[in-house]
Image 1 (spheres, helix red, strand yellow):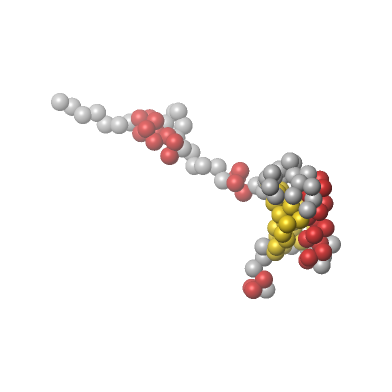
Image 2 (spheres, rainbow, N blue to C red):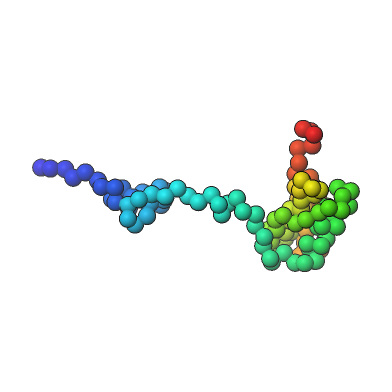
Amino acid sequence: MTRSRPTTGMICLAFGLLAGCTSDGTSQPPSMAASTQPLMDESVSPTARSACLAAVSNTANNGDVQITEMIFSEANSQVTVGVGPTRAPWRCLVSNSGVVANVMSMTNEGSL
């Protein structure tokens, strides 16, 4: 009795979900580009955006602020704001009606 050896195509078919194989039997590494891009969820209301920019500007005592990421949530959306020329990250949690729940620097200030 002869045994058949699994071919690359069979292995990819069996482990396609784990290995990222394509239908032609080749494998491709997962794309990291999508995960490195900041999320700019346009569902975050303009009122919430403005409230975060003002809150971060006041807390950081710096008017040079720019939104770098927005993530919508029905409870509180998260808006990441870059401050100053190096765009030091600050996190702002805000309701969609513009009530700021929390503002926090994401920079390790102990190393400054």
